[in-house]
Every structure is written in structure tokens, then in C-alpha cells.
Length: 174
Length: 103
Image (cartoon, rainbow over all chains, first blue to last red; front, top):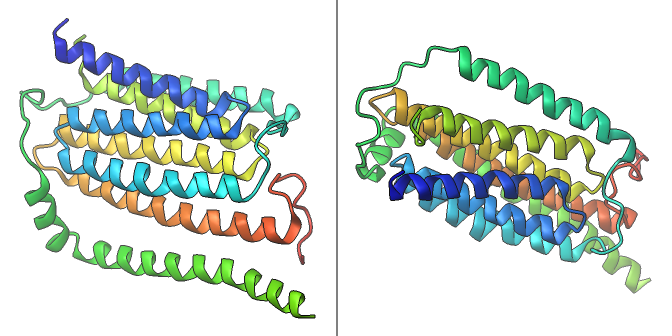
């Protein structure tokens, strides 16, 4: 194996293992940090797909944004230790779904004749310029819709949190 | 089979997706369910990027991954806001204890 294949193997293994830790660890803080490793692993895999902009976005948005939010929400809400976080009755159906999904997807993956483009491994070119062109020409409408959606999410989050704060202040005044 | 191939990416994506589904089904804590959901979204994005790299000359798949990342971020913000609002009201985020419809 070449060096890059070894690194790829380590990245993929770390991603899958930490993905399993996310759903199996008992402490929710630990599972959040396992998810952090998964995000980094997927970012590394994006680099191997010659998707440099995606890798940077993955690190910036997931690790820098979503992870921080999740950690804040964990610390603001529930006590972390000694919380029962598994449905004991749902573990068997969960395992069935896990196995079923894997079997079906494995069959599709093995039996489908994927048309691999020749020389796909060797191409490593910067993608930011092409992505910008695509977003502002071909995908302009989805781009605008996403921006409206982000605005809606922003306002929605503020409204959801703010109502409760106001009510609590009124209660304190009374 | 070479180590870096479409199949290995699909394998990683499949694992992440299945684990995410498992987490969504088995977890009791609302934030843990959200973590499973993030795994599923990551798996979808990874598959789009892998297909775009291995089977297509253009990078249209990466645009979809960008949209998925934006969607996942927006949704997790709203979900976390909901979780905190529910916690302030009902003092718990265990999803089996949140069973009243009108506060």
C-alpha cells in the first residue's frame, strides 16, 4: 500500500468507528466529541475526493458551528451523567434496522454496475472557482431558496428561544 | 480492488447512515437523536461527493453536498432552539417524557 492509501484507510476507519461511538456511548458529551472526530474524518475524505472547498466548509460549519451549538445545548439543558439515554425496548428494532439497511445497501453497492470515469483518482484540481460559477449560474434558484431558508431558520430560532425568556421575566416581576 | 475506490466511499457512507438510523431509533435524549441525524446527513453528503468525483466529469454533486451542509446546519439550529425551549418549559429533554400537546 502506498502512503496515501494508508492515510485513507486510517481516515475511513476512524470515521466509521467514531460514528459507531456516537450512537453507542452512554455519556452524551463523549458522544458529541466522537461526532467531532466523525466530522473531521468526513472532511479528510472530502480532500481525497479533490473537494477542497467542501472539506473547508465541512470543518468550518460542522466543527466550528454545529458542534459548538450542540455542546452549548447539552450544557444548557440536561444533566450529563447518570442519564438513561437508551430506549431499552427499542434496541432490538434498532439493531434490525441497522442490519437491514446495511444488507440492502451492500447488495445495491455490489450488484450495481457503476460507471467509473477513467483516471478519476489522479485528478486533484481546485474546485472553488467552478463551484462559485455553478452556484451563480446553474443553481441560482436553489442558492436563493437556501438563503431564504437560512434567514427563516435564524428568525425561527430567535423567536423560539425568546418567547420563553420574556415569559420568565414576567413571572419574576409578579 | 484498490483501497481508494467508489466502493470504499460507499461503504463508509453506508456505515454512517446505518449508525445514524440506529441512533435515531434507540436514543432517548433529544440531543442524541440530533447527533444521529447529523450522521445521516454527513453520509448523504459524502455519497454525493464520491459519485461526483468517480463517475462524473463535472462537480455538480459537490454543489448538492454544499446544499446538504447548509440544510443540515439550518435544521440543527432550529432543532436545538426547540430542544432548549422544551427544556425551559418541561424541564426535561427525554423524548419519551415529553407527551403533552398543549404545554
